[in-house]
Length: 444
Image (cartoon, rainbow, N blue to C red):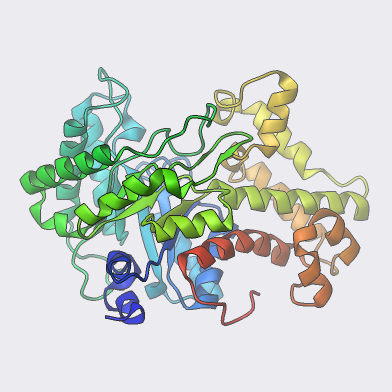
């Protein structure tokens, strides 16, 4: 089997381990965001390169109760597919995934109740056509410790897989023909998703024995509760030694993860899924893929890049339209009025918190973009700057990474083109590390 046929015979996810076994390691970029412009940029990336777009939603973002986005799994599917239809990406080129699917949104409930809700969520994800399910039952519920023993975590994950298996192949046209059940990822990582809150000086990769133990315990639990699903477990979440905090990034060091990478030889069919790979340099991303961390999850870096571009446009608007409302001032007001998404995460004096609210790598400002007031402010900014091409000199000043392409005529000096390209540049870096082919068309 050649790399090309492996990538098309059973889908890009199922091809990851065979390609590694043939010494042709490839990766896939997992876009973890519900922001429409981030999703559009990801779908455009896939369209331009003839690849698949893997778009994932978390249990807190999207669930049967609506999550913090207000979307059920079916709503999120329709949301993504509507964007794809507008830009001309066929539905068959989209893979939908669910991240950290488990009892986390209901951990305030007794364990049986929380797991029942988690089972309903898994069923809703499968019915909506989500193909990749990360099962994560590692968190304690009411009356339990915060982190549970591996045996309990594996039993609960296997029970969730069993619930998913009862849904069968559903939603015609959403699932590739011939695929009869979901693909699973098991395991979790510490610290929790979204960025570390402590210093990263002592961050270490998962111990090889711990990774193997997680795999074996899950294998036994699946044999008891969901035996048919085990053959479709394609990934294990581990910590390769990458993470980001408020103002620091732990860069991947291959030498420290060599023993962990070698454990894949003892886990047939699996690759590693790496969370919190945001802000890793090009060489680090390529090394992660080479070493078996084939599923690269990225989220906050994408909205961080979008926020950078929005603030650049906001500064241009200040020169071109004196007296116009400031987007940054609007976002500051929104975050101060509703501090729940940042107050428990950003320490320090008021000045330090002010800096982090807008410029932290953890990018908790992303929780505020979906609000009606933020959406209206962004739309007003885009409208103000859309009447004529933006002066290249302002692009040079405030969005310098995009200036050469604007000056050469390769990139239109319009707000939407600049915003999409800012996010697209991050995706291009990830795609290059994953082995995506060159773009076949210009971004529009």
